[in-house]
Length: 185
Image 1 (tube, rainbow, N blue to C red):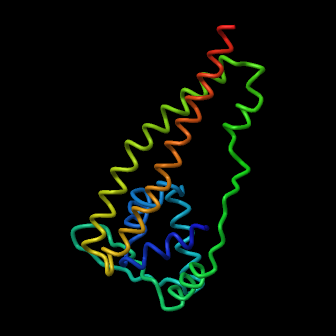
Image 2: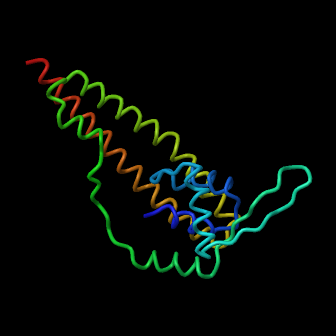
Image 3: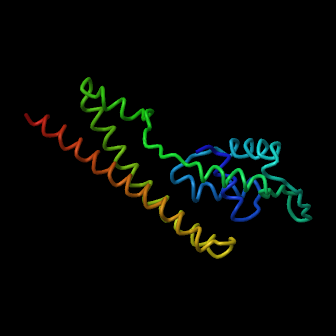
């Protein structure tokens, strides 16, 4: 997936400013896809140049003016085409932490610390991101067109990531246990 489709998908829920999209991204897609605010704004500019979104300036007297983005018919078609051409992608060859574990025999203590940190950070991630994603899915279920149906899909992706992270925690604990047993020998 590229960022453009995440933004187009969010705009199918409702029109939004770049700030709103960044905030929504952090509370939904960020559970499994990361993007900086600067990337989001840059991508919105590209989408507008391609005619996939349009923006309008909203003049506000009590606040700074804002730019509100809407998905165009061409953007909806592009998004729909992307959805229908989905390919399963299960390979992720660039996991730096696994490279360190692979070579961990050179420093088992550092590897155990890395695995503990990984396990602990993964637990925190589930504890923080999952409730936020649930809250956002529920909120958008009430305000977005088709939100009830769409929120089911949010929750399915959140469940996938949660189960994946639980498996990662179990893996880290197994590795730590194995390395600790070897220390006792």
